[in-house]
Every structure is written in C-alpha cells, then in structure tokens.
Length: 105
Image (cartoon, rainbow, N blue to C red; front, side):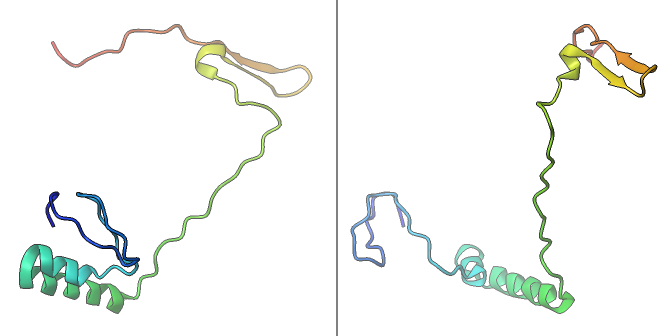
C-alpha cells in the first residue's frame, strides 16, 4: 500500500491516505513471506518450530514496589548522613562538581 492509496478498515470506514490498520491476530510467517519471500517464511516457521520444541516460557517480570517513609535524598548534591547508633554517625559530604574527563589527547 502506498501513501496515495486509501483502504477500508474492517468496520467499513474509509481511511485517510497513509493510515494503517493492524489486524487483531498477527501472523509472523505470512508477514515474513510478504517481506522476504518464501525463504523468509521458511526461516520464520523453522525458528517458531525450534521455539516450540525447546518449550521455553516467556519470562514474566513482576513489578517491584518499595515503600519508603520519605522522599529519596539526592546524595550527589546533599551528601548522606547515616546514624548507626546513639554515639556513631557516618557522614559523607557531597563532592564538588567536576568537568567530565575525556580520553582524547
């Protein structure tokens, strides 16, 4: 489809030039056949077959939420102070800003 063509979407509405409609179910093998010919379709089908044969499940990352009792401290500009016990406190002041160093000579 070129930008000059108009096409009807599944609902029967006329689309503007250059507007695309994505199919509800994607067929990667047909897409590979359209874009890269028969060799692309065979390669895509083979890779999907290997994926199924290995039986790997997609990795599902869980969201990590950390509760804090206050806003985080910007240690680059404010430094940090940690009280270890009643008599001991560790203090690290903020370092002065310096120019970035480059490896060019």
